[in-house]
Length: 174
Image 1 (cartoon, rainbow, N blue to C red):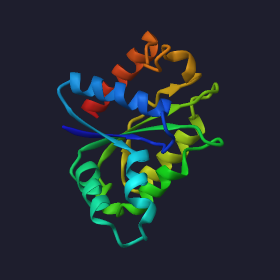
Image 2 (cartoon, helix red, strand yellow; image 1 turned 45 degrees about the vertical axis):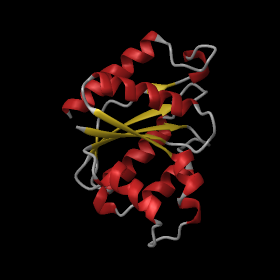
Image 3 (cartoon, rainbow, N blue to C red; image 1 turned 90 degrees about the vertical axis):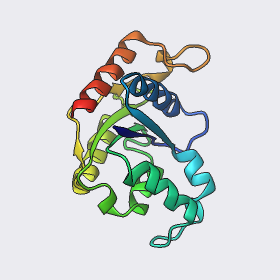
Image 4 (cartoon, rainbow, N blue to C red; image 1 turned 180 degrees about the horizontal axis):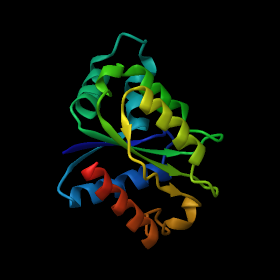
């Protein structure tokens, strides 16, 4: 099974990307094929210059390999102003809805605060449902993310790692 793990921010050196990398390791350990879609790289090189309805070749290839040709998604998103980053909505708006329809997704929230982006996950899940994407009921909330990493910003918290492993296992059979 091919899974795209979306790091839902374009912020440099984000904790969201660290979680995406750890999740990819877990998925690979389960025998599936993870792809990471780093929105920082995507929007630095392609979609910033894009006009709706006219995809650049580089973004079209990213869309094909990371969205059209995968079975499932995991959207890992930080909390921005009580919601999710606009750059993630921009990605959704650029890709034709038919490429999402009928697929499955998991969502994971990341925040420096206490709620783990609960509101953002609910809002984004509604968007995915509108696009005919089924969303896994388990939605890990990684609160106080700075306390879950070591001095080199590697995710090290045992409880959080077990939570991500459980989520990946549930997504695999979803």
